Image 1 (cartoon, rainbow, N blue to C red):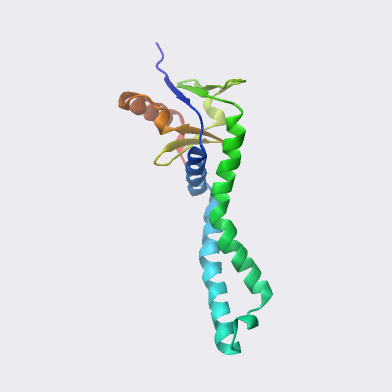
Image 2: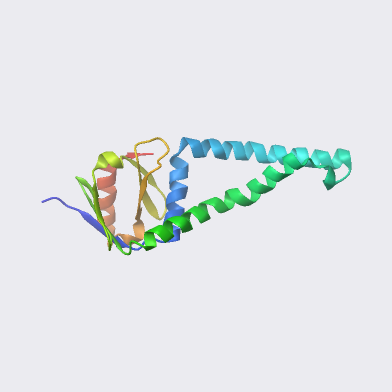
Length: 172
């Protein structure tokens, strides 16, 4: 008899925020963005400081330098939270999720729909402290499925789930 693990849960914004963080760690595009941000922001700050030192005031900082820096300082940290809220609002409409993980793949049932996916649709795995994130085969993981660890009933089921995921996916 095939063993399965069933997760029953209502997705939260926290689940999606954790999933987006895990997906971001697995995405080459996100890693590039972090590098650009890590190099670009100090460079812009350096240029702004130099403009103040050499020009004598904040008003001498060029606007084309200041506007992107301020936008990056505000928007970049807020983006994952805003995306997580948007995903959670969409998921709220579906009600409770019942996800069955088995050797054949995933079967997800909501209050309004049901879908089955084999492992070829989610062959990559990113793990965060609170979630498993199954990613689509594309290198950016545009499609993903969140499995909150809080929805696993027992430590034995958690080990079985981890075993199934390790057997059928590759770590991203």
